[in-house]
Picture: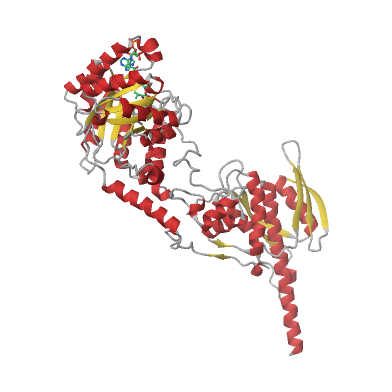
Length: 598
Ligand SMILES: CC(=O)SCCNC(=O)CCNC(=O)[C@H](O)C(C)(C)COP(=O)(O)OP(=O)(O)OC[C@H]1O[C@@H](n2cnc3c(N)ncnc32)[C@H](O)[C@@H]1OP(=O)(O)O
Ligand SMILES: CC(C)C(=O)C(=O)O
Ligand SMILES: [Mg+2]
């Protein structure tokens, strides 16, 4: 009987907020380091001086989501959207916002100017530098200056290509002409009153080293304050890019008076690794974008670079850190995803929907026992509030520990045989469905666990239906003694035919009082939950011997197939009714026996 099923709906239990057991020194120190880095981030953003950073371990974050990011095909954003993102970037604590390429269009000019006026003039403790991009020509530079000059900290970023292939085929200029253009334009930018000028030798990753040292030395003399080293076509490997930065640092005259920066495209999927290698080799500005969006395969992603520095900077990178408040990362990612229309792949590091989700049983078991078994970052660190604390996503690879924990979260404390039975049914459903929702699980519980004593059990069912004739159903049921019965019937539809076939076997005259069905999850592979209410037709006869049997009995069934779900519900209700009848009769007999004894 149902009374033998030991399930209780329980309130969700409060959880420990500290995932580190107090006596585990390794985790304590790891926790301490993370906390210390976070405190230092918020307390120690060094004063902004264009060409110098007072703390040698501080790495400036230059966000170019609104410029290089917008160069992703289809990512064009309105001025209002760019302003919203710029505000979020300021909240995040980026040091520099490259707001656009003002010469490229009036719309971009207006957007950059708007951002410079609003975000570049904020009254909070931290106001980011607002930067505009310009080619090495006067019109671009004037336009960029016009757009950013109202910011508290304006910057012009000018660039010209230095690789042989770009100089020969694209610019059609000699190396000396390129040097002259670069130096005159850097000086011109300074002459406009801009004391924060960044210069980029485009395609530095494929440029001749000696030529780079020369042109970079010259632009420093002309007044550049930041030298950005772009791997424009994402061609270098991490060791190579790190060496490039180290070589520039060692061989460029006057380099000690400027900041070296990285700008890594992602054509080989190495942009984050290259950026970290660059910072390790001496770069103190990293150019990145939210979600890694950008030209072609994108840029180094801000969240990956920042979290890599936060997680490993202290241990492996000489204490490098940034001023990013990582708790705003998820929001920034969502906003950029929404406004740019570029969807984040589910398995994207840090911000992908699967980045903190665990589907396989062994991992889920580990997560339930100690989160650091399978997570190196806590989701709260990036502002992610998980719907369940351990990030468990049930699927066909999940195990009992995870199912039990998930059911507890839903309010069902299930153990032992009931858990085994639910687990078996769950595996079947999970094998057929991509996503198991909470509603699916609840439907499975009510179908499988809250079953009355089994009198009849559905073994097989086959239906045919359609527009050509009557629906027919063949049903095979198994009785209490294990004997199998088969019956066929026609009906007005497949469910009606199936119910009539069941009636032929069970031979209990009942009326179907109510029938309802819900698809409890979205999609074509949703589980259908059926609820039926039946009433025994010959109730009066039994009522004469004092047993109340003319009550209604409900049954629920769940399955992806609506006919199976319907038949399960019907048989469930029949079983309840038959079980109730036999219990009532037994009780009556017991009462009579007791009377005789007394
Ligand atoms: C690596 C990077 O991401 S660089 C930034 C790339 N981003 C963009 O290009 C987005 C915005 N661009 C635009 O809107 C347009 O390209 C504009 C408005 C800037 C220019 O448009 P147009 O004047 O029609 O020129 P177009 O784009 O066809 O060609 C570029 C011209 O700039 C020249 N050029 C390219 N880079 C530079 C440079 N850094 N400095 C000076 N001139 C340059 C090219 O040689 C070419 O000159 P040419 O017309 O004499 O052959
Ligand atoms: C403008 C420069 C810095 C650039 O985006 C690149 O070289 O990729
Ligand atoms: Mg770029």
